[in-house]
Length: 125
Figure (spheres, rainbow, N blue to C red):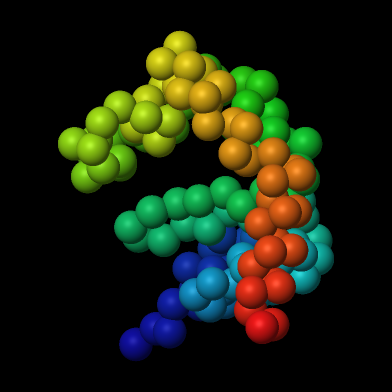
């Protein structure tokens, strides 16, 4: 009987770090996981999915804003909300740009600050 470590030994030719990531790790631990792995990008692969977690905000902006066409979002994942109408979540390309222009004012830094301050004030009452 093997315990699976033979496969890990075989995979030593690939750069990797074995770390257990509990549910919600990216919110709770944030930067510490990247520091423990010694990398700015963490690739998490399971039998069901794969994901890249990126620590560098410039890279995230490059992928999500500046080069949207090179990295399209999987709009099929949002099919459940499509019946509520075409909007920024379920669209891409020129249609996405139109929707984003309309809603972007609500997501400004100043608006986020105001919502945070007001929410905190209400919570402390």
